[in-house]
Length: 70
Image (cartoon, rainbow, N blue to C red; front, side, top):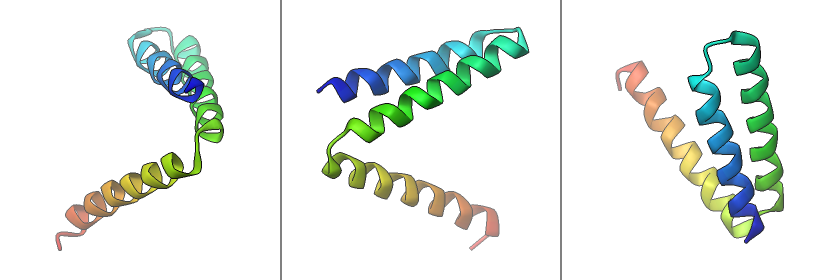
């Protein structure tokens, strides 16, 4: 269950980075949050990874279909 904490920490860091007005600190915080999310995703069980990938692919697919006007 530690992967959930790590994923939440990464998302919280990215959310906080969006509030930072200084560009250098914001970019470094987003990079740090992304690395923490990747770490949490690598620690998560395979079933969670598959569900997350399917949700991600479906959301990107529906977004692309709206852009193409299909």
